[in-house]
Image 1 (tube, helix red, strand yellow):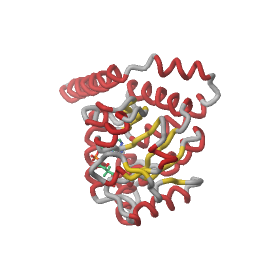
Image 2 (cartoon, rainbow, N blue to C red):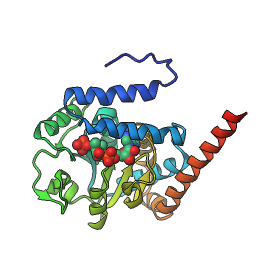
Image 3 (cartoon, protein in one colour):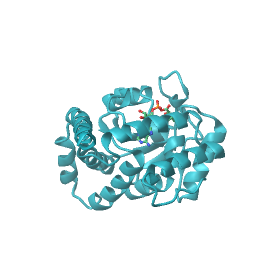
Length: 253
Ligand code: PTJ
């Protein structure tokens, strides 16, 4: 990886870019993942490259849903494992969620490389290499494991393609999406839409899990029952507008 000086004003963003490029070079991230990362970076600019209030609120609801779930699963793709393997493993460990590799551009080699990478970061069992169920989808994301995504009641889907999110919601699952684009089909379909950078969202969720895992069940349920995803998406769009307004004042001054 190219070394990025830590005092570079765009350090975080450049480092994330290096991680995704490294993932492509090592074979666990798809080439298409580079385009996704670029799209995400543009939206991150628009939200001011920090977790907005709406995202923090959604992240809290997401952690409550995962902690209350019977069979929560974190779905892992090539971008997520390039950007934050340690945080995926930490979140799974703290909440008892399973990890399952599920890829749009699936090859068996990529599945194995991703599992190896998660294990190198301390993961126990990682599902995904022996899919025994198919979702009603026309692409490789249909391949899931019966004890994982197929039977999960709550699924966290970082950087999704939309179709599968819709299908999982249709199957009655609580779907938590992380997507910097509040207008994407995924964001608009998910049960809980986190409009935040995946790296920041996972860091926040790891911290929240540490705090909330000792909360009573009724306290967690209260977090979920008061949650309104339509308001969260509307708030995310307002926060972008507000940020742009502030920037236009700053630049115009
Ligand atoms: O590893 P695979 O084969 O499963 O492929 C994974 C990708 C990401 C290539 C695949 O799911 C894909 O093509 O996704 P899309 O359709 O590009 O959607 C990704 C969404 O995530 C877009 O709306 C991006 O804006 C958003 N996004 C990209 N990077 C980030 C992000 N959101 C949060 N954090 C990011 N770092």
